[in-house]
Image (tube, rainbow, N blue to C red; front, side):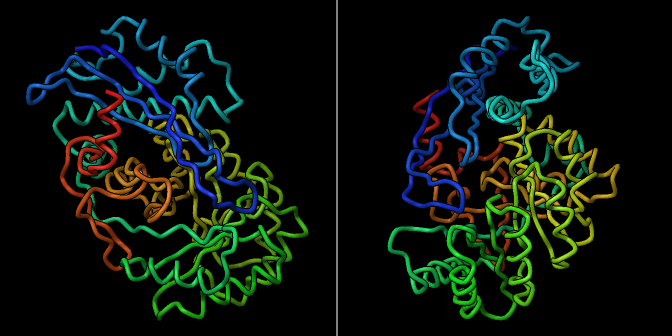
Amino acid sequence: MKIVDIREQTCPIASPIRNAYIDFSKMTLSLVAVVTDVVRDGKPVVGYGFNSNGRYGQGALMRERFIPRVLQADPASLLDAAGTNLDPHKVWATMFTNEKPGGHGERSVAMGTIDMAIWDAVAKIAGKPLYQLLAERYGTGQANRKVFVYAAGGYYYPGKDDRQLQDEMRSYLDRGYTVVKMKIGGAPLAEDQRRIESVLSILPAGCRLAVDANGRFDMDTAIAYAKALNPYDLFWYEEAGDPLDYELQAVLRNYYDKPMATGENLFSMQDARNLVRHGGMRPDRDWLQFDCALSYGLVEYLRTLDMLRQHGWSPARCIPHGGHQMSLAIAAGLGLGGNESYPDLFQPFGGFPDGVRVEQGHVTLPELPGIGFEGKSDLIRVMRELA
């Protein structure tokens, strides 16, 4: 068997929303299709992948470096020991040929997108849901199809007032979510406090609020927010400062003893390791948000999970950023703590397969081969146009 083609396309996911750092008015992502010569039900098996929001499409890097390396490689060098399926680790190593270590910001996104498509193809060729394949190869052998999800929203939006923010959060609760997240740091502290209190006032018993500063704060501002947030008993206080400012994160624990979350903008095992070594993160309460689609893919994510175990962290403390089905599959197969969800944003790439509903903050993944993209009608339509 072999890969016969890899196709990529830049897709717009623009929106008038903003967080504390960027707006999404020109946001894009890359969509990738890996076409194989394996035939199932009369059609070639195609694996699909795309990168998460917030980092833009990476088509130029794919076209110039990573796709040619895979297509020019000896097809046999990319196969597993049985020669009947692709080996994602060998494909990854081929993509990384002649790449120096370090500098993970854009290259990691390009490789992570292709890697997602490779894993989708591998699971389809094996005739299994990706979550089950992962459980058998790297987990306990049995996947847990029921996965915790939270609703990410609460962005700043032109003309959006507190009542509209409350209505947005109510809509998530009405759809079965028990944890909702809103943005902070894009307004003065007093205004953000008012916004937070407006959301807390409408949350029923058993439901929680998380807040996300998107790395906006310097040390003094992060501490000021920590002091102001302490009385609220939030689900977490997310990404207070620059993702590589490990000292800020470590100092912040002295002012905020409740759960914190970070990691979505760390794109390698090595950076993740520096966070747990130097960032003061606490494995009994804090959350890690590494996103495989942005950080070299699942091959690298497996290395990250191994590193976390060596440092006393459970995979259950990982709730990835991105809101995509790849992380859902990883969560179900490898025992992560859950996954982010964007109920109303970045469509058709966010969300779940048709018919999947959120119940008491959890979704149950259907038994679909691969990642399960074929179960989401609006998304697979766009993917098949590429393939």
